[in-house]
View (cartoon, rainbow, N blue to C red):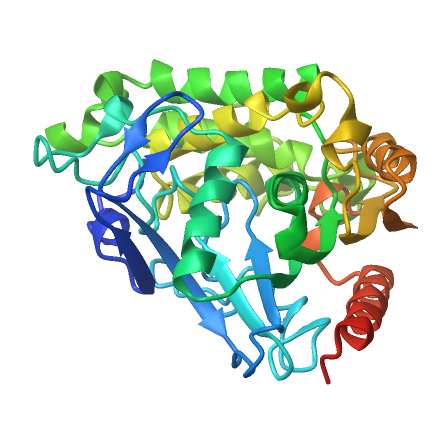
Length: 389
């Protein structure tokens, strides 16, 4: 596996991103679950559409593990289109002609929101592992501070898949009166032991790379490219299904008619995974990967409420639509059903859709007409109730 070049572009995005930035001074700390009062700090975000006079049409999009704020515009590092153009844009289920859409990079990220790659004002060097450990609740607190600054009292809808769905659930639990409707997709109310195990393998791959340098690679001018690429390769397998892998690659050879009897990438699937690993290193910070995976591991919404998930949503006025996929083994439908059962026990308004798909966990990012129809129907119905044209 070849090492990625040490491009300065991802590093520049950490402090001065190619997006909007909201900055909070030394007197405006972000109070984190670890007990740290983080200050100063900033949050990078993008907006699409127009906020109406009543400020009632704001939709917050929460990104997944390796996503960012560039949900519906070209990524400034890779040049690739936004990561959820199937869902967000003019005429899409989250219609930017009707709604004011906000998407922020999570705290602990590497695209402009304060994280381990950001410059520590106390030292003038990247925080690296001196950055406090982050939780999903910390991410949501940071987003709430952004929404406050934008002068928005109540969000019309909060939408997200995977780790983004965790944020949706945390928003509804932490700020029920500020969320009119919630659309968590392909997610869970807590991370499973299996998923924690996969994340730990990825973190160990990063930390085993000698170029990680105890987390100080940015200061020392190196990058744990190989370790991060291996972490991405392993994680990417969990986003797919066996059926999807077989349909796309099977046991087909890559640019050859017979095995080479070596450890080269003989098979198409090997070549694909290596490409995924190398391209990921070009846009993502290795320490951010450690921090954000850890945030997912710590997520357990029921534990925050005495072990009862229903208590997390007790008395909630928020309208919910929960969506899962039949072939998603990373966040299986049973996880979504547990959320729905808790919402029913809390007497919440909830709809549930299990989408028939063989694309695995990544189905929420792909062309899934049944998901689009469910999301559009839910959002349109909520908009009518909210009085949004």
